[in-house]
Amino acid sequence: MSLLEVSDLRIRLHTHRGPADAVRGVGFTLERGETLGLIGESGCGKSITAMSLMGLLPESAEVTGSIRFDGHEMVGRSDAQWCQLRGNRIAMVFQEPMTALNPVHTIGRQVAEPLRLHRGLSAAQARTEAIALLDRVGIPHAAQRFEAYPHQFSGGQRQRITIAMALACGPDLLIADEPTTALDVTIQQQILDLISDLVAERNMAMILISHDLGVISQNVDRMMVMYGGMVVESGPTASVFSAMAHPYTRGLFAARPHLGGRQRLATIPGTVPELVDLPAGCPFAGRCAFTAPACHSEAPPRTLVSADAEGDHLVRCLRPEAMAPAMEGAPA
Image (cartoon, rainbow, N blue to C red; front, side, top):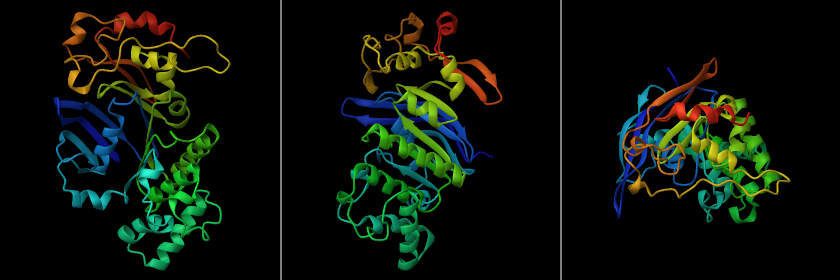
């Protein structure tokens, strides 16, 4: 039995323009110790997929499909039942620590809170544990700064504090949603290295959400590329990067800046459609150079690109035969 099993997950949101299908048929499994990356542009469904795994969707959201955590179905559970897991067995590192941290409470109180709530520690015990956690994530003079407030720390230190909060109860699953977006490159790598070390040290499963292919390539075993609420390509990270099979994946890769490069960056034609305007078929229809009339109306099936001991490399495309010549020149 897998730690996490997501099957045909669909999330419909109600907007002022009508219903919007924010997540459409997402499915994956995750074992303890495994790492999975979700990648795509803003609005593609990454964060709302993560929020569904935390039970943090808007009350009006309609959720169908299945989310099984450690053998228990989570879709349809009450908020009280989610609270038993949230911050305890499932934890999240948010992308903006200044909104994740409460500015009117000390950082020590915030790190100690889940320890008292979920593990029943006394105030003194929680303080000792919290100081050890802050020290482990690299906060200097943790004991002396226990009573400090979030605004008294740098951006990188605040992100380390949110990591300490997430790890307080030793979760089985850690979700990191763009954890380094607001940080400079040097601090970014330190945070990613810290998360990787802690995940390996505690044998946690991790879902890393990013829009940066470089971050995904270096930090996860498997990856899913999302667009328009749908997983358009998935598989072992090395397999996907060696043979990018979907035009959207290849477009993201081509749009990356190169060190020392002077040429104009490649762009993906068109614009990302609003969720309420997505076509019934492939969400990338119209922006893709291989678009055929059927792409606008028929849901693209999963097609096997390759299979090995690490897992299946899958792509959703109605015209894999048209993509095949382009794949021969895909970046290694």
